[in-house]
Image (cartoon, rainbow, N blue to C red; front, side, top):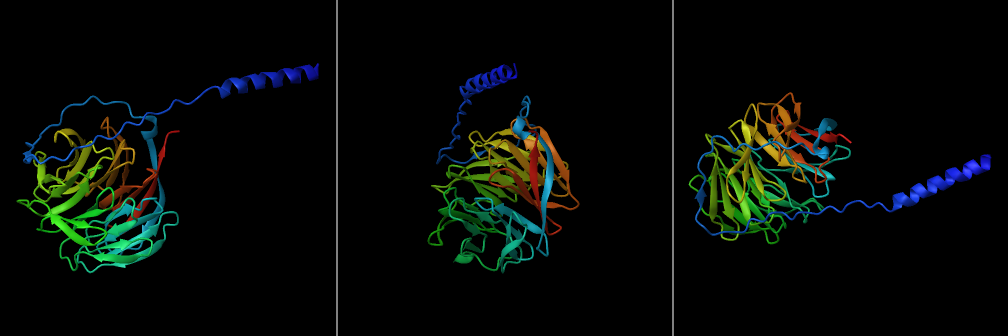
Length: 360
């Protein structure tokens, strides 16, 4: 009787396994990013927008239901406030610039300093890392992160911070300096190619390339965002939100559809790139200093100035997913390439590295 029962159990298990083997996971269809074609049309001034259009919220997806930001490392090494942070392409290192005139490279796993680049500028500005060339840039120079050697000198002894942005293919670098026109540099030769159209107000504080490399967005101290056609260097759109008087940061979404901007207005503004219209606003209690999209574009991370708080938002619904208070002002924020980690630079000279934990 025991043998007959055992055979029956084995037969039932085999039948279940055979039935399970026939199931296949559905194949996800990847929607190609929206490409904004270059245009040489005259610049379009977008009228100030007081109230964004009302959009019905949609439920957050399961993978964006954030339940916690778990501290991985508190990275100490700068002697003054951290200005900017950026992950390397593979996410193994984190670069940071500080008001102490140093750019530092950190090992993400250990939190230990790997290398330090000493600057001559009084106040360091943005840094950026090329996607496929493993290069690090500031307004002063371009470095090879494999050899840790400077390969090109750009501008030395700056009194005011500069802004930099690599093109998506890493072949060019946009450089914006205080009261100067934006210049496009050739990364291979280290020589300037041409300058963009002169703006009425030239004090650029932040720049970013669109995903397809056809546009450069420049946040300006007069509260406007200028969209430049890279091929011609001409301004094709001027974006202005309500009473905004100073733009601190601009960043394109990974699919190129949206542009997020932050300034003195207590909100991050999400723009539709093609139309130049406001899609929605993410309300803060103070000005927005820095923001970044997750690699899949579903989450927007924001760092407020005197708000002392990191906030994570659902891009489609506009819902606040999670917030984390800090003890000092925040200066910069960046997602890791895999979207698992979040780096936050602060006025207290520290960098806080968090793991984003979600519901299973």
